Structure formats: C-alpha cells, structure tokens
Image 1 (cartoon, rainbow, N blue to C red):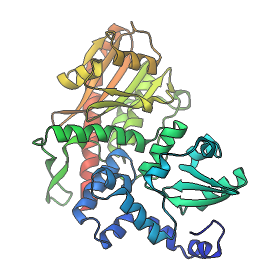
Image 2: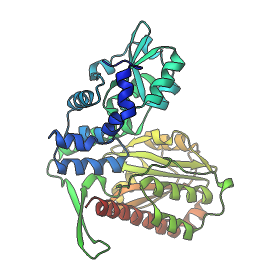
Image 3: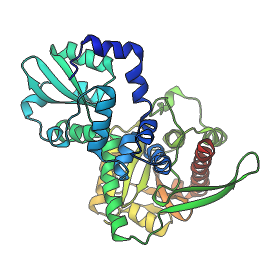
Image 4: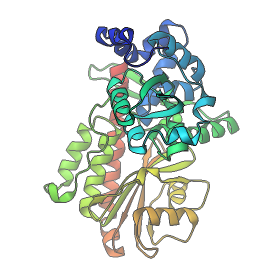
Length: 394
C-alpha cells in the first residue's frame, strides 16, 4: 500500500506514469488480452451514447469483470483496490467522516477509518488535488483505493443519496438486460448505409437500443443552458445552425431546451432508454429545472409518454390522472389541468426521445407544425452525430 505523501508515489506523479496509465484504459485491456478490439469499439459507442466511463461501459456489457478490472488497475497504478462488498457495506460513522459536498465534488467514498487515516474509494486515484483537499478539510491522512466508477456511483447513491449518470444508467441498463434476456431473438444492432465525404460507402452499425444517441468526445461543460434574459432572441434559423454544429447529444439538448424556454411557459426533453423515459432537460419560467435528470418513468405504466412512444404520434391536452403523469406534473411544477403538447423524436421507426411543452390549447395547436419540424431537425442532428462518430473511428 502506498500512503498519500510517500516519496515513491510522488515520483510517479512527476514522471507522469500514473496519469498516462489512467488515460489508456482501452490500450491496457487490449494489451492484457482482457478484451478484443471489437469489444472495445462497442464499449466506446456505449460510453459516448450514455456519457459514462469506459470502464463502466465494459463492465455493463459483460466484457470485463469489475473485480478483475479493479485488480488490473491496482497492479498497474500501484494503488490498492477495494471490493464491492466493502464498498456497499460501509459503517455510518465512516460515512459521516466526509461531508456530502466533498464526496460529490470529487466522486469519492470513504469506507474505512483507522486512527488518523481515512481510506477512500476513487475511480481515479491519480486525482491528487482531490486527495489533498480531502485531507486538508478532514485533517486526516487520506489513503486512496481504486474502484470501478460504477461501484463508486452506487455507493454515493446508497449512502449519500447522490444520483449520477453512472448510477441512473446502470438502473436503465439493468432493465435493458432483462428485456434482452426475455426477448433473445430481438436484433442486437442496426445498420445505416451512408457515404463519407470522399464518396466511400459506409455501413454504420450501432446497438439497436442506442439509436440516435451517439456523441463526439466533449471536454466542455455538461449543461450550457443560459437564462433567457442574458441571451438575444433565439431564432429558428439560429437553432438550425446550432443543431448542425452540435458536437454531442447534450449540445442538441441544450439548443432545443434554450428555444423551448424562450417560446413556451414550460419545456422538457426526455430520453427513451429501454423500458424507461428519463428526464434530460427541463425549463420553467425561463429557468432551468434543477434535478429534472433524476426523473425516471417506467413505460410499462400508463402515462402520456407511454402513449407517445407506443403510438409514435403526438398527444395534446391535459394529462389524465395516473401516478406516472403525476410525477411529470410535479417535476415541472404545473397544475393537472394545464394543456400540454408531447411529441416523439423518431429515428429509424423508433422513438428515442420526447419533447414536452405547455401553453394554452389555441397556442399549442397553432404551433404544432412548427414543433414537428423542429423535432425532425433534432432527429437529423442525432443522425449526423452517429455518422461523424463512425467516420472518426474508421
């Protein structure tokens, strides 16, 4: 074990060996023959689609065992690993050692306390700034342990009630796996024939359940929505230009929600993942709705979203009283009698997302054609992202 502050560890830091190792997980696994090149490509698509870590993607797809991955990285980085059992059975007195804002900021979980030492699980034990600040705030010596990001996310959700993309993705992925097990004959992939800029025919193959949600790598902020009072009027022409320039799926969402926030009292976007519709972006009174991404609705239960997904047709009017619809109204902070318009975003005959807006019935009817056109533009923007991603990877 290498305690924080040990000279050997700092020599690794300055040499850059550990940081380099952390950036090349795919290469390491290929070299160790733990995955194939084809599995890595599929996991990268999965990673980009749902915005999760590569290790979590490999684990979820069944290509790598989480314990084997943790042991490999532990060996390569010279940092001890923590087991699933330890991480999901943490005493309350240890959890209280680190405040919620600190573990959320650095995506770490304390799991052991011995005298003046706190052991913390981290997906990235090379994050020495995090280790230093945690030590400063707590006054303890911090011992970093490595753990797959998905396990850290689960522990944060269990002990701190912190929901992340990893944790939400895993919940939806579990539903997807059960559905695939129940319907083994369902097609695993779809193929989109298209042409590259040089005229070469490309057959773009993506997982069938992921239609429309590939994205390019992005190092910018996750959510760039700006309150409307700080922005100039957002026109349809500008929306079209921004759709075409989108670098990832969140860019598409931010463009759409900015326009909806300008034009409607309430606007929302949902992603359809397997048997669930998950909150993506929400705006009310021109302000972003905090925590909207935590909303998850089962499509097996009656709701306007289930109706739209199954019919692939829009719905307009007040919502009927069902538990799932009540969750939508609560999340958007609107009354039950409020007229709503919900439209599906369709790709390759499958609903991949849904758009919701509120206004009076006359206004909704008058703007239906406009919104249908914008939904088609969003669908094309997603298709462009898939093709760009495939071209970059070939």
